[in-house]
Length: 169
Ligand code: UDP
Ligand code: MG
Image 1 (cartoon, rainbow, N blue to C red):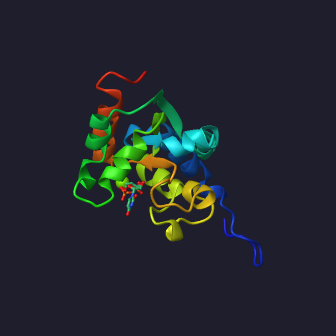
Image 2: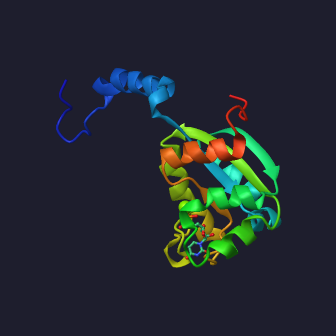
Image 3: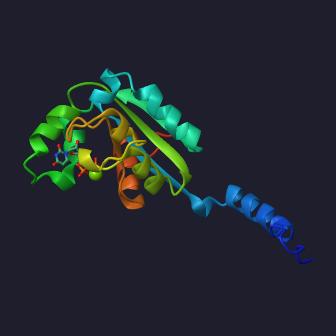
């Protein structure tokens, strides 16, 4: 039925469709992705682990793996292998092996892109307020947190840090 003149259009006719779509998305495994997230040594030292977990939980993501460890140089070098020709590589490996990190796997729709947005840009001046980096750091190296940049790298990083059977599910 058309709404009377001047009345806002009713969304009622779409409701059954919307409900079906929401239920579908909830059960849809295809929409679900996993990503590797790591609170770096500066984030742990600054007691920001809880704040970071809270943000991802509030957003609706699910924590499916969590552990604290001091990374070996070998693991750190493998993790950052893509940067091994860059001038900051040595300093980066020194930094990430300098203390405990909190290694996590988070799951949810579009988890890689969603968490990258919440983390904020690498360059401090581009990290917007409201993002983790934008709210808590202005340093390019000491930037609190790592997040996978694509589903393929996420799979590699999850395997590197948690092994094949390291997750509860
Ligand atoms: N990094 C740095 N100097 C740079 C670029 C990166 O110290 O010019 C460090 C920084 O800690 C960053 C990490 O190297 O998080 C990996 O760099 P990448 O470009 O992959 O940034 P990210 O994916 O973490 O945003
Ligand atoms: Mg990166």
